[in-house]
Length: 306
Image (cartoon, rainbow, N blue to C red; front, side):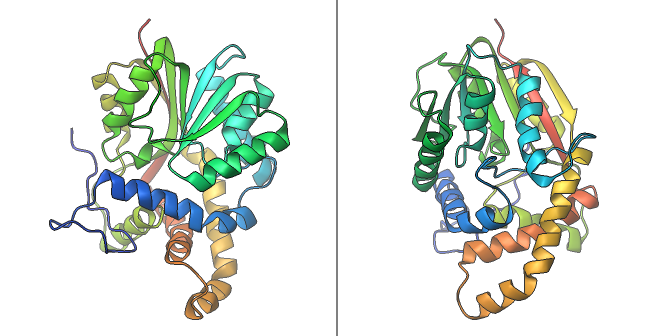
């Protein structure tokens, strides 16, 4: 299976190997650095103390605000996964703990969250204490393709906009399959490449997104589905959620336009880190890739056979 393996080009190039490629370790490091360096950008422009969300919202007929949309994403994914209070969930790519804390508070299940960022673990633990769910959630530094947990440790593996960080998505699928108990569920939502042919201008926007968010590649919906089945998952289902995601994408774009003068001035003064500048460029480019149909947003559910 060929996964959208265009070269990943970091906003730095001091750790390129001799053949011009990046190792998974490089990408893990860049992912952690991106979220660490951009924490206050996300804090001021995207999430609040209630949702703690580093993902797109889900806008339906009952959603009125950005804050509601971010929380609504957790509800929609939780319902699709069928998570109950007796279950143990692995939040694979937990960020600063938003979804894990929401699950513990609203469902009552146990959640283990993993991220490649030490700083994110510290934030998540602090937020869990503040929300009163520290006894039901645990946060650790780990790579979701190579976790330290025993076989069959979880009922659900949850991945909101994180599986895209696996260089080969099948590495993530295999690890999720190993970690799930028989009959367990993998639930994942993300952006997926909708096509392969781009104009030069479109390809530039795609690369701005991949580079700025330190994402190595994107799978198509078909590749993702096929990869799940290759790795043993069955009863694969997919829900299209592009229309429900577009309002969040548009909001991100508009915020970038409003803050463009400040970004330009601070960049010229050397007050913005490279990761922050790259993140700003993504905010502009990601709306183009959605609006012009280069990327779809979908939610996948798959089962490990009982």
